[in-house]
Length: 515
Image (cartoon, rainbow, N blue to C red; front, side):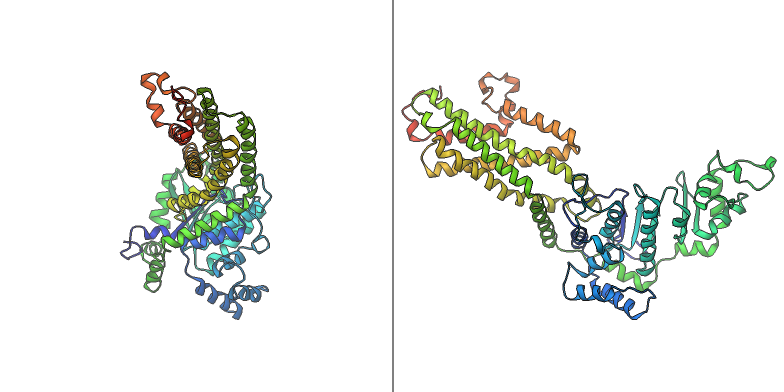
């Protein structure tokens, strides 16, 4: 049962939203793109309701004057921008000026801290949730910015009929005045829950009065403290006894909380909205639309991070040219075992460099993990959608980088002159590159921090090379270590490119090339 209705166990998860004190976003995306992606992933379906709200505001049903409302309705009606839900939230959050500005981070200039906080709130406002729990959203903000954000939330709660629960640490008086109700929690117990203006009256009944010199927020925090409580006692000092939190909570439940209020807490919502709310929570988007939205975002991030990918491409191109000159075909023969060792060394370098090229995935993945974990916990991004999108995006990059390497080195070094063997070497290196990227993404997900992930990545890199069969042959490994040879992906890549080269007919005359 939920609000008097039989519902699916997962439905309440979509009706409520938790907004953390940390503003975790992709620095490469703009504010509009960030909120629009959340809108697509959360399955919003209330564009017409919001358009009706905007029209009612225009007609004066709600007494708020908005000079930009006409241009806003025209923009959303004629398709300028992303969608109506996104534009509506951007408008009421006051983010219109920075809507097309990158969010930014420590290395990229972006929006301010207050604007980031509004963008964090906007991510969840576009969803189906009607009840929001916000955890210490004033962290890192000055009192003026905190006041503006809470004022926005107050207006949205009244305008859109939302329930907003905010935890704040020592809010200034002007911010506290914006709240309709106050919940005072101490050591896990509710000491007071009711209208803001009645809070001091409850404690005055208990014998504690807030002085005129003291703001209410500080008084509410100190009146339950054993060290500060006595200064607010208005009775005879000789009769003062410390009033514990348990006694405050019991007094509130038994005497101060009136019977009608208790009945209101137990009564379900009106039946007119109940079915509508629960039905809207089930309007989830299909898996295909989730994948399309996630894939589109990955393409966008690929474009925004193009300097990194260009650098990787240039790097592997330069390395291919260097290796080609070291193992130039004019110095490479195929008649003796020594010649075979030279070719084996060039193949080893090919596998090493292709594998090493995928190590950049550690830093890229670590940077994106906090945002992914936040979106996953908010039911905005399933893991399979991100994994499949990242995998598909990585395919053309692997094709490009391994294609450049194979094209620049194969005929310059003088490998087997067969197009089929050229394709086979390319496919082996392509598979090795994909394995490398997947491995380092996996290690980054395990490490979760840059230091730990780098340590795991370096250890994995060393283990792969040592047990790969080239640095130390399988026969020279201790029997209890030979399992490492068979578990190293380097073994299979090295053997594959070696067999592809040395099974060519030009090596048939070297009878002892593998002895």
